[in-house]
Length: 281
Image (cartoon, rainbow, N blue to C red; front, side):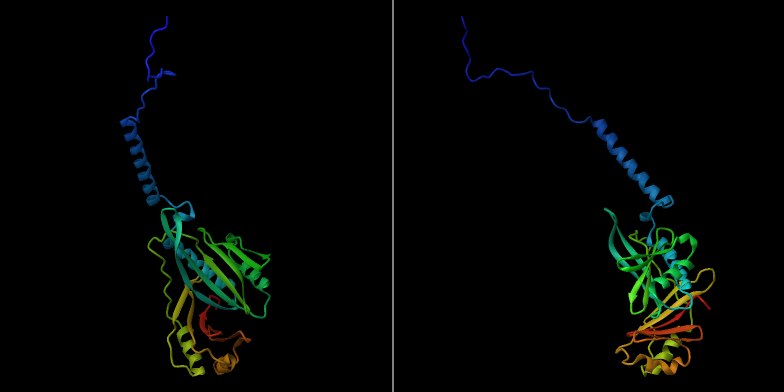
């Protein structure tokens, strides 16, 4: 005979569930201490160990490498008309997801309107240090020079139009460190050469707006450029500079007029007037 059935109750369909437990307190403490230890070791390594990748070399450390590379490029340009360009520092890049950085770029402009750009770049590449592994290849956008100046500093070169070749030295994104300090320009004849050029145009005396320097390779000398911008730009540059140039004219084209006074090369490209002492005597 069947016994009475209780209503409102469902019999169990499986074995009873086991109670759940969190991590033991001692295990949580071990994990936290291990994470803190790893963080401390990483900080000590970054502070004390020598850098092994580009991202650990700050702009402060990379700056002298960039400056020396600029001097090497000026020397490799030989007796061509050159001008050092101002440094550019761009902030806002990310070295790591947690570390902001900046990039440093310096450049040299080579003026040679009558020459084939590939030939100019090849000659410059051949004169650079062998360890740079400099070479020139032809791309769909024209010839390109590429070299490694060491310490993860890249050198590139390309035609920039109007008979100009632009050579650029780049660091890539780096920790800022104490920042980059450009070499101070030693006293030289560049400012006087600019003043003489200004007088021939009838401009009032104006000090250079920028004075840029880089160490020449293998010598206690500097390459230096003093720059200023003429406003308004001269309507007829060659005619205006002819009295100052005399018989020392180096370039005379619609884009560039350049001449040499003693060891200084004076060049006018559009409204930009530069006076440069190169590395070559």
